[in-house]
Length: 376
Image (cartoon, rainbow, N blue to C red; front, side, top):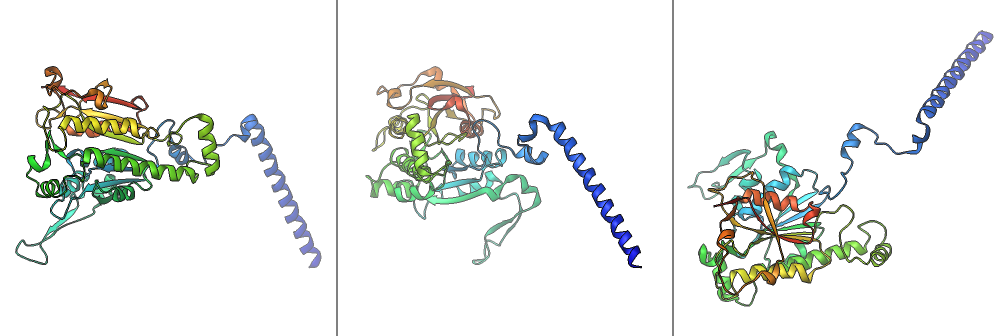
């Protein structure tokens, strides 16, 4: 019996040796087929290949702050980012809250991003405890990517709050404004909160000037901190050494989108309007000057939008652009308008599209352009 067991063990060992030799032969054949390509890296699967980052500027895994997200254009920018750039890490939707008396369009933001498309319920209006409207997520909303949106509140004239909302942010799209058209909101909409702030704190500042500077300052400081900590690759000393050797003070990493996209108004979009804090046009041009001159380490594009018109101008039209100097160089004291340029119009949805696309448009880097889609 022992002799038979030994024979069985020998047969099993011989079978395993033959199997091992067969595998070795297969490996040698595969290595021969690979040739010089053997050492090159390959994606582990078709899915991995599809996830490889595209060349050039990209929003992949980036955090984008939309300032003024509860305004008409700002809410459309949030929708555009969420629907067309699911690769972003997060869309931070900033809502400018001046006081408890001003919500500045929360319903508009909720509607635009599709938060109200779920299953809804509305309590009875006469009930003091259960008269709120609620909306529950449904599978139809999967493509809205609402899980990537975070809402923050901040008073733009408070530099501490602005520093807080820019933490960890890679890019900013600025849609905030103190104006409705060319008139201050306190006048155009009889907004009590804005009117009270203007009267009670006349020296607190303007969204277009001090507010813009606060956000730019917060973004720059946070990017500098992350750079010196090695967030762009390597350690802090190495990052500083590379920057010094290249002679560049840019805070952008490889393939990063633009740091800042400013939505402004073209010189001839509206007639000028006098306010206690300077004219409408002067404030717009001064804000552009801040971006162009005070923060050279931040990459930017400034889009001077023509007059918004959602009623008579179709959406989905190609944008036309005209480069300009921007800033106070575009400012004129005469108050008049170029009648030909005054006819230029753009639908807000197209303006939102162009603002989002500008983040990854190398051709707009460091430029100020007037933008429109139609003439009326």
